[in-house]
Length: 114
Length: 116
Image (cartoon, rainbow over all chains, first blue to last red; front, side, top):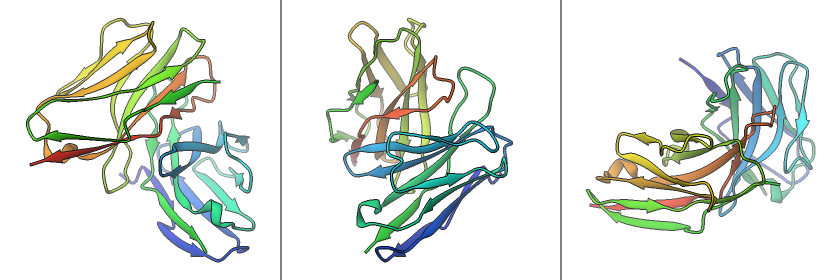
């Protein structure tokens, strides 16, 4: 069972470079999320999607863009990376139905911006 | 806006003993869900326990139980018979029952150390 897979797991960028993080889920989930985790701050929501073709801003969206062209994939883009975007990024997904539905998380992607 | 606060950055417990991790939250809503997630060194987020606000009974999962005090907006996690494998970051999280995006709001986390 693959579940939620994030690619790449690690990446080092220079300031100003661009990159895309890919999140893929094989559970046919409707909802997908991108969080960033920073020491002492927990996980903060960057963007999310409630279905194919939809995206919405979370708590800390500045400097990021997302796309959900296919239901199973949720891409997080950094157009011009900044050192403040050094973080561990987590993708999560959730099925549509059920008040008590669980979030399934990927293993995280560590990004360092020099 | 809802907030979740974990005031203990780090806790330590002796193996086989009991430890309680604290969490408080702020909300004006009456229907919501609370969660505890465990993040071991592997970084994988693992759901430990879930509490529905309209249920008065505290949730229990094996050695893990919660003390849910709705009026005080407190949601602590008790780990009994602590094991070395319990060492991890623990995050408390909140989800509004009215939010159709189902997004979670996390606290800053508590690192749990288990002494052999």
